[in-house]
Length: 288
Image 1: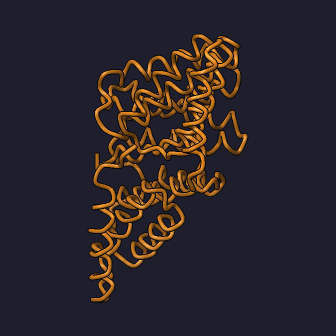
Image 2 (image 1 turned 60 degrees about the vertical axis):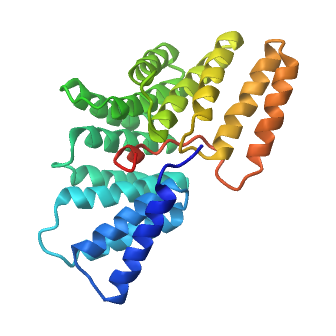
């Protein structure tokens, strides 16, 4: 559950911003510092602050000539992720669309993540047909030979979760299993382990909702084991998963083990952070 180097990075960028503000600097250095600090604060769960900083970066960009569009796309992507973790899907949709318009020179793997993020926002708004089109666009980028296993696994986790929610269980299983295969044994960073947990958690839910409790328990156990190695997920998000794992164990006749897990889960759920399991794909970008 650790967040490698993010608190240290947050302090460095905060200090840099103070110096730039004190000197009344308003060039590309200020904009970059703002959106880098926004990114770090978003990863740390300070999403309202993050969106404000990234919007300020965009306001600085507007005053400068010849700003690379990929930098503006990066700022919009940070804003979109901040809105996602604040449960503001319509604002997230708008920001993801802005990022997509500007991402012509963005590395293809991250262009795919922009489209997967748009799909997630659209799913939250109930725009299922549009969401599936966005996911298909994201997957098409990888079919063109782009090699980034973590980013591809992140896209597959979004697609698989969407199919699960829509009741398209066979397609969900295929996508989620593909994603696990990309990361299993190679999830070296907290960000990558967060994606692997999301994949395994959705496989657990897939079986649980079809009343295949023994199979669900296997995937819950695997997800919990990966989470124990350290992720960028909130303690309450992990607590929510463990609470469901405990219920699953009770249904399979393992009541003492289930009760112990539920007690552990309730301790995590008393924390202040959001309860949902949210994987921020932009964490793959850097600071691994």
